[in-house]
Image (cartoon, rainbow, N blue to C red):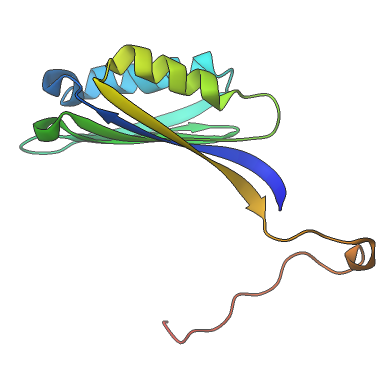
Length: 137
């Protein structure tokens, strides 16, 4: 694989339900995490659900941070996806773990990029191919 980015999946359990239900606190936490990662923040959007829960995304030049919370379970699912060499997604994860203070957490790291390896014989071949028509349209 030609790695283009790093995608961290955070499972945060045993968090404060009140914290997980606060749009302002969630938004500040993700913005702080983006700054901790040395990412370039371009914008953000957050939504408060009724009766509870928050979803949101911080768009960064390097990709994004996103979240969905379940206050009734004390749980948050967070994605930190960065491309390039400048941003440090692990620092974003550390910041979020500190801010959310979960009783338990798990981080899974995925390399994101172009599957397969290009050989010298493939150098002149375009790397993009049109999608297969599956007849879904």
